[in-house]
Image 1 (cartoon, rainbow, N blue to C red):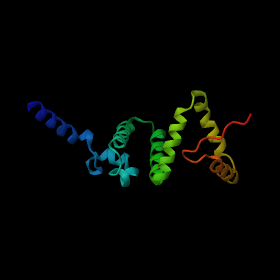
Image 2 (tube, rainbow, N blue to C red):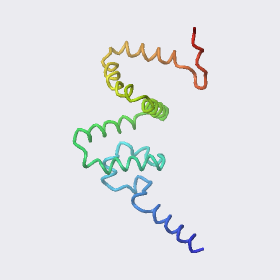
Image 3 (cartoon, rainbow, N blue to C red):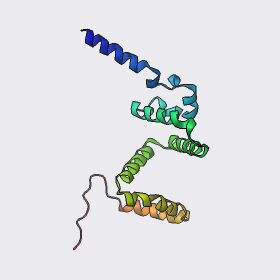
Image 4 (cartoon, helix red, strand yellow):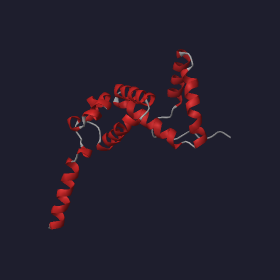
Length: 145
């Protein structure tokens, strides 16, 4: 009985500790300032995502100015994405992470090449990618001899 009471008290104490703030209003003012682009969606985020963002906010003051600006721009861009766009971005990130190191290291160069294409060419490539992408759950066509 004592053990159960101890564990309950410990769990309640940990959950209510500042490190486990789950609502936007419970964040420290400096965390709110850093994470401001995420405020509208903060209360609907999972606890794991909130903790990841809080860890980033903790490191933010020690980052060089250019990294701080890049982080803020990415948060603003992320906040503008729809839930479906975010899901796709996470999938693409996980696919990229799963690539062998040599292919993964070539990705930034390929991305720069893509961004430097004229808008019409990028649209054409996007259409081709959608047309050639197999439906979810579909089996790939057998290789031709």
